[in-house]
Image 1 (cartoon, rainbow, N blue to C red):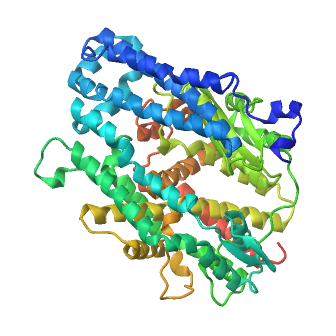
Image 2 (image 1 turned 90 degrees about the horizontal axis):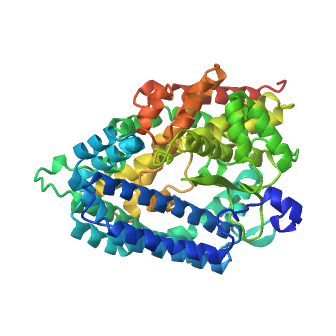
Length: 612
């Protein structure tokens, strides 16, 4: 069913409703202008923040700005329901412009807080209970103390930030806006080669007869990227240069010993207080246990009886998606039943996340694809879905509800600014739910083919979220290291680096179409361009989720609940330790690795045992 086909009664039940935020676009615009009012109020405190009363006024106004920003952004998500809506696109542009102006006007604040000093602010917090929630926030702020410049330089950087950051926008222009329409002949019909068609061919074409077809469609799919390889390599090189330049500009201690200067990776880990050894251990673990990926690929190789097994064959399904259709209501009931194991307190928050107006379920012509959950800072979490009546939609709903429930727990148990939990923890709750959904579906599967499908898809999710993200993390780390050594990058250097690293993570189990042809698939990973050093967080999150999932199975659901309630009140690794997970220990990966090995063994038994 399409969203636009719903009657008014069902629209209230299954569609977003943000009227509690703003009645219409005009009221949104009016609220946007309040940023100027807040900026003017803060300007009256300039040069006076060293007085505790003025500092408290600054914190109050900053909170108001954050809360207003959350409301304004939430409303803008209406644009995802119709990506052709030009008025909402204009509102989004207005918001971006206003944020840029606000940052420029308030560039004096960080240098002034730095001048007050952490010892003074700690003393204020210790003697004023109304400031208690700000202790960790200030602790994080002063970790970056040496990188905060004077007011003049901070204002200057703020003024040029728009042009300096424009280079990442070039990626979207090249890959999306300037993408050439590609046609491909499939099933005797000339069709546009969309992502959907491409995946359909890779997953569902005839394993033997269509092997060359999959090779051809893969080459065609990446043709546009390959044609822009030099431009994309230059864009990526520029993004890394800007990151290196930013640290050099902000490294205002004038140390001559460059060995004491932080690398781009170390700088990115600083805010979360993540030690470099954690990143190193993650990469080592991924490389050491990539034999599991090879085992899975070898199973597929044997199952389909290939002479050669190419990368374009790895998406083939060993069994078809169960045909039983699942309605939205059936999906909601199933999720409640599955997550009942987490207890009454969890279910209370789950019911809040499922209230009418908070989830937009049905797909539509110009609606954004995929799914997400967002919210916080006083704004209720919302979910975007594109329900297709399959098990995949059920799994997606459980995943996104994990995010929403996490947000609701934090809003209930923490106060601003600790209601904003860090990204490194964001995928934990959602993937715990995925593991629980898999268990339920697998244990209730009535036939062998359904069990094969469920095992294969869950194994692929774990491999994609753990090993593949570690592979990406190592690639961008090595690319940044080359630039930090002032080694120029180009399309071929990056292609060779990507292939060399991919071979450490199971790719050597695959045959190449042509040994002489380079692969230029790496620019498809948008995180490299928009959020460097982000992808490793997917791998750590699923690692943590397997540990907490095992705790739940062993009757220790309080570890998960304590994690959900902590928000951003401490450094991420401290929050995890309180929940019984120590990411700095190498054995923390054992629950994930053991479960993956178990699933691969189960799959091997199913596909080789005809009587099973």
